[in-house]
Image 1 (cartoon, rainbow, N blue to C red):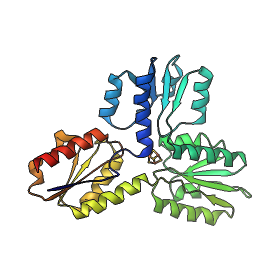
Image 2 (tube, rainbow, N blue to C red):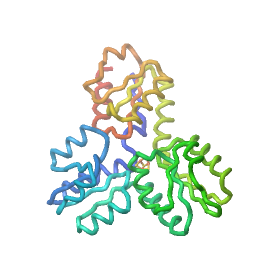
Image 3 (cartoon, rainbow, N blue to C red):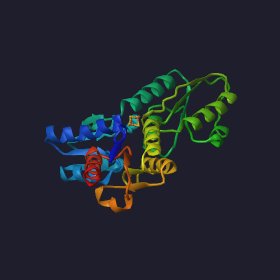
Image 4 (cartoon, protein in one colour):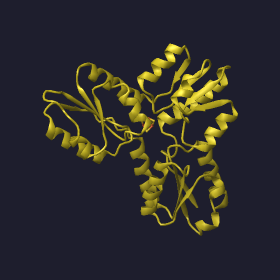
Length: 283
Ligand code: F3S
């Protein structure tokens, strides 16, 4: 029996860094600790942190009512306005914005200061996109589809700078950029899509193709785990979606010789290891 665990299973670099930051703060800081939004979309991790005294702040009003302690900014980042507000209040801030997202903040801030129109390709309701927009000044628009481009006034001489949400689909990004280029001559395009998701999907697919059964681990609300499951099921009929070891019915796996394991971006390492160790013992 062979168990193959994907190297890219679980947290990406930015999420790992943010989660580690919260645990480090718990160990080293005495005052109250808050995260602005759940640090990660995983119930187990958020519950564990709550037990260690970390409070999740869900709204700007709640954030504004804080008078002491530390606020940790998660990997998605936040609008400049939020950083300014916390600074004015004198609240200690630990910024765990993923460096790849921070790089986009810096780009849009600089390019917009130079007078360019900033187009952010992404989902306008996603916190990462709202954060980026918040660093881009007044002259910025969010583009999610071709209709949004049609409805955008590009002005006559406007120079345009295009960036992307880090998790946006590359093919869709390319298509939208082509349409934008037809509408304006002066377009600089910065592909700011992060490879972590794509790499995880590519590796999962290639493992699923080569094993008898595949296990995908992730929170039931995690859309990237759902996508990972679909990709693996396409490649291997015998694919199972579980949240923790408790969901794994080993009888279901049947008599197989090789098992592959991967996990979504919000699945902690200890859950992946637990599953991996148990599959190894059983087989
Ligand atoms: Fe993760 Fe940062 Fe990429 S949070 S998906 S490494 S942009």
